Length: 173
Image 1 (cartoon, rainbow, N blue to C red):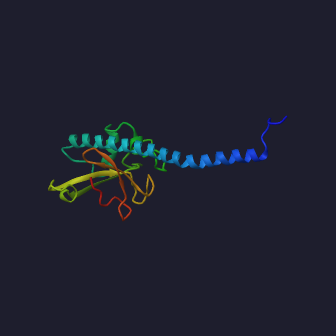
Image 2: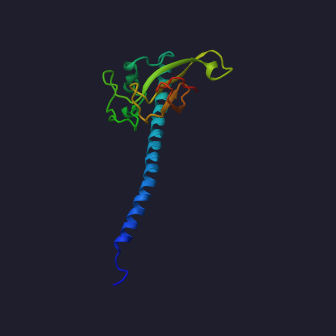
Image 3: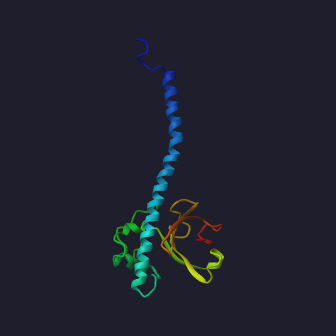
């Protein structure tokens, strides 16, 4: 009956090989999963950017200025689903609805006005560069400590590293 079963040594070798392969592949799978979450987050911010643009056109060039107005993006159906305001890497559960009293969102909206010459030489003048990012409240990191997605007023969304202060200071387009 030789060759019908595994010896203890063969079993240990097989287990060690499987463990080694799992140790090599697991970090790659975790990174791939987070990359997918970042892509969904970027898409959410892009959709919010489109909604902000429509809102601005309907309200004489003004963007929402506070949480009550941001809630209007959902209430007035510029954004169809409350989950658009939720980053899939956020540890908090997704919102079921957005109201002025309960604006449970994963994104921080802020208008950052900078001189364009300091960012884009030759452009001149002051301009509002970015609208929102996946960092709220200050100190909460949806995608870890490295950085996050940032929505710019031209509708683009890009990944940016955090500045030396741990926040989005110094974002350049």
